[in-house]
Length: 311
Image (cartoon, rainbow, N blue to C red; front, side, top):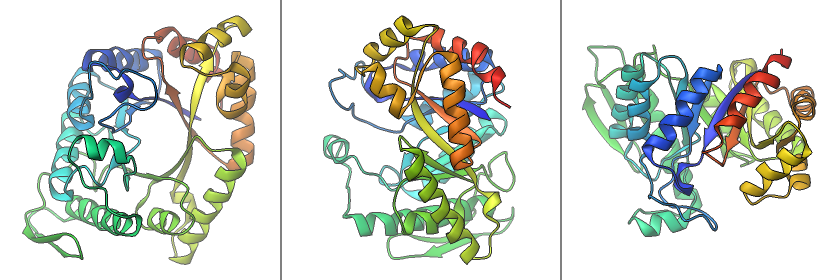
């Protein structure tokens, strides 16, 4: 079972804050550090000092870490054109020595689009654009060196691109797709995903969505076992009930509710909860959403008392 730390820096975190978490993640032995890709805070957080760009941040972390995987859950297709996005991600992969994983989603948060002058198309067009972006980005990366790449879609056209630079990983960094859409999302995952992620869902919903992805893969003749299953869950792990309560309160959550919907409780409780998830859904990876980025102790606690009990 891979455990990865997942953060939401738009809620209020500088680059240095993220660097501290990433280094703590690496030092504690986790598999990866991931972050969201958002430009506007959500809810009651003040969001100070303001947003940090996901791929600029990951480029910095690529040079200041040595082992952990780095990526986004997930980059919004509405933020960047696919050609420059392919260049940025390939460059960060090179800068990291081949440690990048590429999460891409359709985009959804209307307020951040309005705040920064970005276009959020209607849902059907958004998914059409998203599908073209997946095809273009992966197509550019996988074009053999010395050959060119062209694409003509409804929204994007590329003509005789040199398809450079190439990422360090060959033929491409792993692609992560996620979400709860019942038709197009599984179809796109079957075509493009190395990993399918369900964020903040129940085990029942996750199981049903994983089954849809498996069916979509079989329909196009792909082995569903090629697509790793993962979930993202909010954490509130403490050595005792008082510490669990304190950690839940620090992120504005009720401890009882967080135990039911996320990964909260003592290490023993959380080990049992992850075991239930694995048995009921077949997941082999969990993204631990750390909402209090000052709480490095929780990172160490999970590494010391939860991770060793997972096969």
